[in-house]
Image: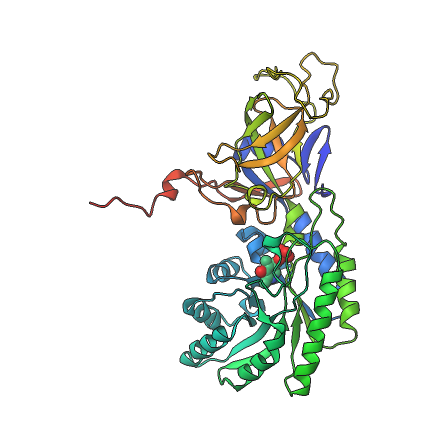
Length: 448
Ligand SMILES: *Cc1c(COP(=O)(O)O)cnc(C)c1O
């Protein structure tokens, strides 16, 4: 648990605001972000990079809420975008287009035009065909496009296959062995200007060694280019630093940056980084309410009001998120607290332990639950086999949900997307209203 989500008097808080108050005011499911946590993460990067020319380009796709982008923009961040839409978000949030790098394998002509018009810092080009298209688009606008090539260093990020991007068989980047030839080609194209090199090997990396291996390969390339007279202004080492969801032990931001700087040696090029998850992941939680408890013969289900459309990571990557009760000692009141499952003890699971605190006759029994959403898919789960002392209406916080949570959410099952709240000290600000069903079908119409 990050320091910004903590228990105070048995109540889980974001900074100084009880999550139960946020649920009461804004409803559930609801994403809650801590502004202080966002700021703290960014400052850890900038402190570690002090004294070296650098730009921290927050990877927008991790969490693209305008309030989140605005926090980083005010701290001087640049942005790593992967679509024209993300560029529009950055600008709407007060971000500086001149600090934007544009990644992605499929940039459309319209997206290129938008980015050239805005005057972004750099296109991270991922193929020979993209070089040619970008040259044509820039030429047609009377502009010169700043570019770097995203090279694929062919290192194993040792992460989940779906979020590993730096292997030969991945769709990302240009093959390491072809990079020099492509740089030559770019140099010959009149509407391109070579400014840097880029690599991004994957996400949720919990060791520094793959990053170092990538840096070493990138530096060999930089030297080869220098011998050809191609001098780079910046080296972009991408993002990918992992966070602690459960028992992972990723390096601290300072140690990760120190390792990169060590591998870079005394090089003078400006260093660009593209952190996403590590800046927002543990700065956010998904607040959800128990709708039903459903005892089963093999498993007990806690059916909550958040689902895979709100938080897709468990269904998509079998990802683990800690799930904590918002109240450690739920008080009585209007709801019934009898949670005895019909079948009692569940085979194969540890013995239920008594709820924390206690002595009260309303004490809730702690049981092992499958925490699932209401969506009609067996893959719709938030967590497996979690020991929880809960009753219907209990609030739960799904932790480490700030990255790839809301930004990957969908409207499957015609579920309006969750509200988003940013806590700043003692105040909770609504930063995205809960969607309405009318908004969901506003663009649809029957055939007459
Ligand atoms: C997704 C992505 C990032 C951010 O990755 P994290 O693992 O969230 O840090 C950075 N750069 C590129 C090109 C990306 O696609």
